[in-house]
Image 1 (tube, rainbow, N blue to C red):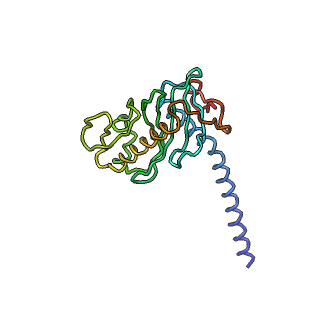
Image 2: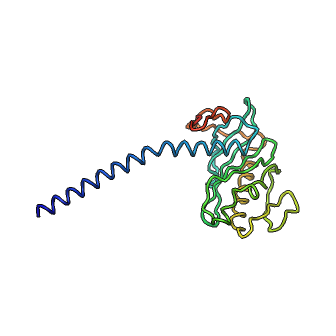
Image 3: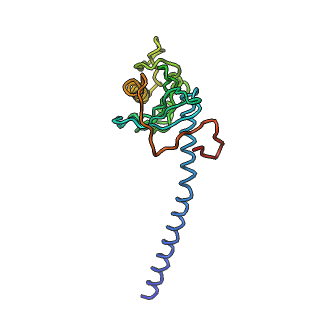
Length: 211
């Protein structure tokens, strides 16, 4: 009986020590993960609204669930446009993307942040051959076609991944509609007091979060 108790105590001690080590490792990796996500976000904002130098998160009342975040992009205090982060249902799960729309009503581009689409098919959505089609278009309703586009409002689908292609295009259209209904024509969103005053894309250094 004493041997069993000792064995149980040893196993318990091993479990406790292992739990402490794993907990410590998890805690240590949280900040690097947060920094990596922040860098990815900043890169997406800069890529989808290249005329802007600073980005400020804003809060718009009553925004739908699929609109995850709105950032105003400025240059020397002048509003250059908005980055709208939207989530759309794809083939394998939700597709999160940033959509950049200029103050003049141009769709400046998109950046897919995360997805769970099929490798070799829908997973090709972030590639320029597909996502690059959304660059420098008028902020108007876009549609998916399976052949070469015949108009500026058409986006050619990824071969074998129509569902993914449609999901991305739907997300872009939702972002455009949100912009038209809430941010166009001088709409005044309320600044989010829980975010930094401004995030500068030009002041960031690799490995450092510029907030």
